[in-house]
Amino acid sequence: MSDTKCGLVAVVGAPNAGKSTLVNALVGQKVAIVSPKAQTTRTRLMGVAIEGDTQLLLVDTPGIFEPKRRLDRAMVAAAWGGAEGADLLVLVVDGKGGLGSKVTDIVESLKDRPEPKHLVLNKVDLADKAKLLVHAERLNALATFDDTWFVSAQTGDGLAELKRAFAARMPAGPWHFPEDQVSDATERALASEVTREQLYLQLHAELPYASTIETEKYEERADGSVEIHQQILVERPTQRAIVLGKGGVRIKEIGNRARTELASIMGRPVHLYLHVKVKPGWDEDRETYRGIGLDWVE
Image 1 (cartoon, one colour):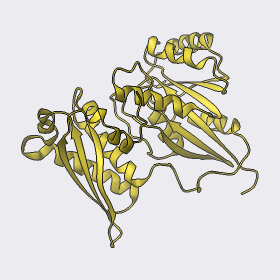
Image 2: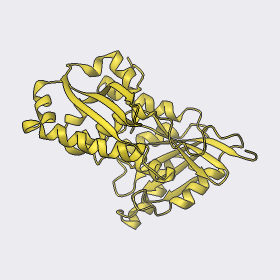
Image 3: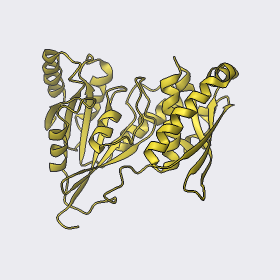
């Protein structure tokens, strides 16, 4: 392939700004899990988008927030690590929300970085238009952004122009991935993420944050289908009971929805087996961090 361009776009922001929805929309299909709950994304994930002769490597990072636990510190470290060496740094801000300290602290951390920076005010379909302009003016006063964009990752409003602008910023070079590859995540990792997404969508309060997924077995069957065995780790027996649900109805629903989505994404039958294990202090275990793709942070 000649005269091609390829570059890294780091997508950062506070929790629940819509970063994963934006990455999915730019790629054109789902590569990152999404839920209405903040801090759904835990690790760096790369979505691969094509715009003309340009391949965009979109790094979806965990939301940046004030860490309280080791897991929080690891997630924030992954977010800033995902921004290292980027050809373009994109700050995504929830346009319908206020500009609290979570957002302004991130801008303060970004302002002296050398990478070109774009500001993306997301969720314009839900936001007050006058407030959007005030947000844009205030944020541009705090840091120098090369461009400011008003988009809706949910409806697609403004995304075509945004994607073209990102592509225009990328350096010349060969593509890093085949044209039909949309993510750097393995199917095994994707399977864990899709099941974890169902925990966020179907369970309430803090329980999704107190759980994680471990893949015990991932095996291709001779008939072309895939067999996956996963453990849902929780901290306490009471949490295990909630995940199971009365008569096992909740875990069955989690499994059914995850299996249906995985089969759609992978384009083949999926046999998914879930069970719940109580593992106190799983978020202080080095092996668990390695399994979910996070660095151990002291």
